[in-house]
Length: 173
Image 1 (cartoon, rainbow, N blue to C red):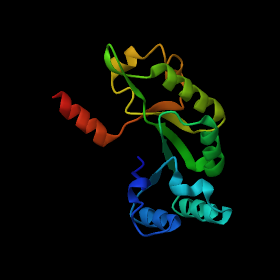
Image 2: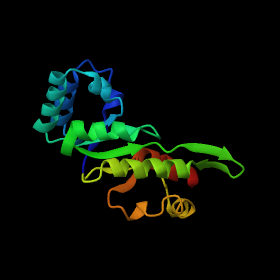
Image 3: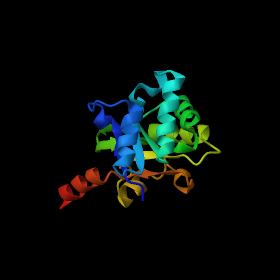
Image 4: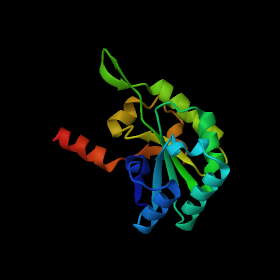
């Protein structure tokens, strides 16, 4: 099991990104989750990027990148190129809509984006999916048409945020 932490919640800590990565590795985390801004990593000089990658390698820390609901697949490809085998997951927030049925997910848009992300990362081991979606078997059945074929892709899945799942389960009881 990978014990990962969301690094964007730690931006207020007065450490450089490589120092923060090393501190987290020394603290026992075995994976890191960045938001898609990567704390500005893509805009940094190559020498700074190399320091970050060396820090990840020093602790053999795999990376998950958490993205907004509809991230440009070209950006995902750039992240895959940047991190190489270090990038193991790309997760996204699912987009909601309100209609006559209540609040539902933008299933067609989400599945199209996910298909494109899987296409641009073909040939890698990068897994992709949405956070907490679908949340249960009922939701999986409801959105099955939009996600036809995706559930058979071994690189497609769901990020289960245990804190979110706990809140959801508590609200149902």
